[in-house]
Structure formats: C-alpha cells, structure tokens
Image (cartoon, rainbow, N blue to C red):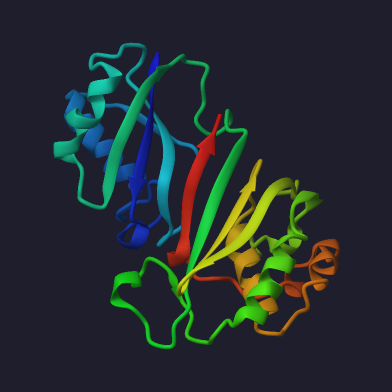
Length: 248
C-alpha cells in the first residue's frame, strides 16, 4: 500500500515539479517534508510535470514507504504540515494499492488559465494571472468564446505543442474548452485525456490572438489541421496557468 495525496502550490518560487539539481522544486520540497514526517526515506511520484511559475489547485502524488502506512491517511496532512513551506500544502490523503500509479492511472485532467484584463496591473494578481492591458471588449470576448468552441474533439494537437518536445503521439481528446469572464478576470478552462508540452498556454495565447484580431475564430480548425506550431498564436506566460483537477 501507499498514500495517494492531493497537494496545492503556488509555483512562483518553484522551478517546476520535477526534482532538479540545486534548484527548488515541488517534488524535492515535498520529498524532504515527508521524509521528515516519517523519519525515513520515502518515494514521491507526481501525476505530471509542471513548469516554473505554474500553479496547482489539485495535484496528485503518491508517497511510497515500501508497503506500510505507519500514519493513518486521514492524519497525514497534519503530520506533514510542520515540515512544509507556506507556498505548498498537502491537504488530502488516502490509501491505494501498489499497482496504482499517479501519472499512468490518470484518465483526465483539467487546467484553468487566468487573465486579468485591465489597463493598470493589480498587485494582487502579480504572478497569479496574465495581466493583459489591451482591452478585450464584448466583441473580442465573443470571438474568443467562438474560437474555443472549435477546439474540443479527438485530434492531432501538434500545432499547440512547444518546439523541442520529444513526444511522438500528439493526438489527444479535448472534451472541454471554455472562456468565461467575471469583471476584469477571464478564465479559460481546458479538459482533456492528456496534454502536450505547453499545450494549454499555446491554446490560450492563440485565443488571445483571436480576440485581438490576428486570427478569425474559424481559423482554429485550419491551425489544428496544419500540425505546425508556427501556424498557431503566441505562448501565454506560465504564471496564469493552474492545474485544476485530476481524475482517475
């Protein structure tokens, strides 16, 4: 048996999830915390990788001690709490069998991307949203909504994958892509059975380019069919991206 844990973190001061030499990462920080809580080495495995600056509202990891669970799962969050920094929280845990893998057992993930659309930036959204000063009016917003509605489906999303990735199979099933607005905050939500490198950030950047007139909403189908990153729009910055939910 091992623990399946849900964590949250603000990614601003982390160099992504995965352990890297001489860098502060989520995995490295969490590993140090659980080792301290149990008084022995543990293996921490994550459900995916996130880049520097990317946040998570729900990120899943397993903590493996080699078959035993010396702390009841429901007590693990409080046991680990004294060993964690303020920008990382382990808030839920349950027992799973040894065959469970936090990455390969995933059937779906949901990301959300936040855009703060005001001429003057807000200190409250610093490093927490893309602060976009150019106004997105009602017409531009409707263009974004229309473009987003064309993205769901089982398709080859190579046009939204960052260059340099070594992934060969670029077909994914996107079942959700929406744009909503409340006051100055726009939220793009994307759900899929898997994501390519920078896929959500490239989708968001393309939707913004649709809003600002670089593309028409009907260009989305052409962009996807091209399977060419140069045909899509800009890459949105990392600090507006949140892993929202993981489904098993």
